[in-house]
Image 1: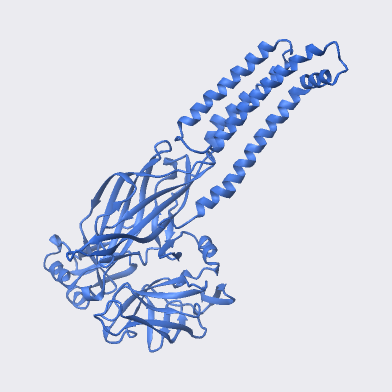
Image 2: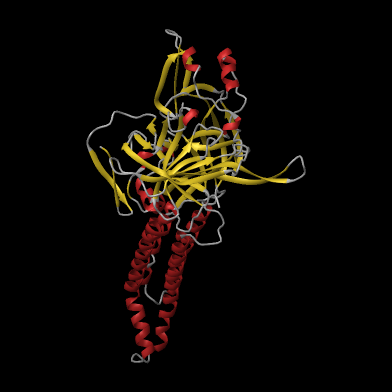
Length: 560
């Protein structure tokens, strides 16, 4: 199972047909004669480039969050799909029940795991369009290390990160989010299981981990391992901490004020009253500290308790000084006597005003922390350099931004528009497309089209090959617009294409720019010169159109 979609392959009992459904196209249900279908499927070959592996990450459980040890435990499932080879197809046809592939994604390693277990399922086989696809999943359980940022405790926000490394070169396989499963990272846990935190959409970062490895000729080679970093983001629910600690300490410190009603001559009774309250506050400080690690900085709660302690010490100091007025009884008109008399008479009101000011500053500091620094921390990206039906928190493969060689996926149009400065959602173009005539003798080819932001900040369409050929292998960019996004029913948007003349030259790629233009016939059809690209799961187009947004002064239209 892949979230809400299912991957299955079997012989249909009634008609001996082949049926499948997968992440790459939940709507691409294929049921045809076994013999005719398998005769023209697309398969992977080594000369076509590395394996293209499509994934989803599902966080099933998050528990045992320990701020003292700075650890958390969890269970997550990684789902994978990739094309099978001709040999694997032949072997599967002979005996599907005992089929084992020649290659499958390596077992994941978690960089920040203290202990780890991983269960790998057997490989299932199915079709997406005419591509022969294998699929499997890895279930990971473990305890993970995380450095908590607690400056604003208990009004803080936290990241729970899991760094997943696949120890095989990206020359062998490459990772891409599932093309037709909109959510490439999901958290399906019931929020009531973690009442201390309110979780929001996770963020998933896809990149590479570089290592140097000794070759058989005793030279070192730089290898790049595909890497995923899942970041679960949460705001701490501060109500419990306020009720249990802040409210009690506020009442303890407020109890200092009645001590000023004791006659100043009874200094020992005054000091005994305040000292008892002071020791109570110190005991609460120890209770709060027991739930936090030893930090080199003070949390907001630490500052609050320290302020209360200083407040009580100042109260004791005022009481001690006020008793000195007895030394000036014979000089009632002197400024010393008047000052000490005033201090003793009005210290009760002054203490209450100070108490109100301290708690007003605490409330203001909590608001500034939650709305400012903590909110900014929660919305930061790029780390690789309610009893209703539980909502799925997700990072969407359509909302991606490339930074420093890594692709960052976010979960909402608002965050995507903030990063790209786009006034509208143009990700309706994203998805798996195919063309039967653009690539000439290579026949039908599948590409994944995404919306990217170029170096000038302009949005462009980019097509990356899912199926490859000797000239442009899978995983390579095949074409990209250079003058912005096409508008449905509008004119041509200039493009450039990537080609390779010498198929034996691994780095012999070059761009033809300009090559021509792409014309958007509809949201499901793009025409480039003599070729046409269609969306894999296209529907019948409507005639009505609507403006969906603008970028760079241009308006873009899509079907309603």
